[in-house]
Image 1 (cartoon, rainbow, N blue to C red):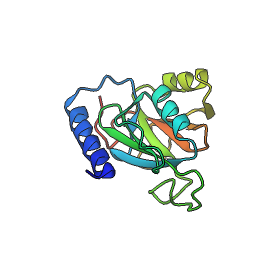
Image 2 (image 1 turned 180 degrees about the horizontal axis):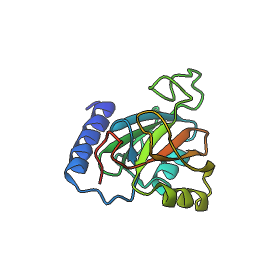
Image 3 (image 1 turned 90 degrees about the vertical axis):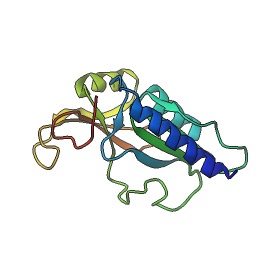
Length: 168
């Protein structure tokens, strides 16, 4: 069976289980959807970051040696991140399928201020203090900006009535 098809099947099955399981509210979940694909220069480092800092859990085993490596991870109730090794890939669009490399990957959290302290204590580079958005669709939400060890911009957005995704 094709390895990428098997990985997709596993992701769908885990996604279905995650949707049926009540959220504990301790992990991050995506703000604008339930799947994101992120290219990283160091796959083991990225897996450790998503597992240890964002409480995402690996779904599939590491890819076979020699093949382009990737890892599926489930973050909280219904969010799946596919982390793939893009070391040596020159295409600027390979790291983020959303198009803009300046756009952060957004997660929602039910306690952004506590998450800010957690990130700082974990040694994550946090950019400024948590702040409240004053305009746009997320006006009134509290946000904390932070950066992964390989330079990917990330955001935690407070879980509130203005957030379009379902939550705990």
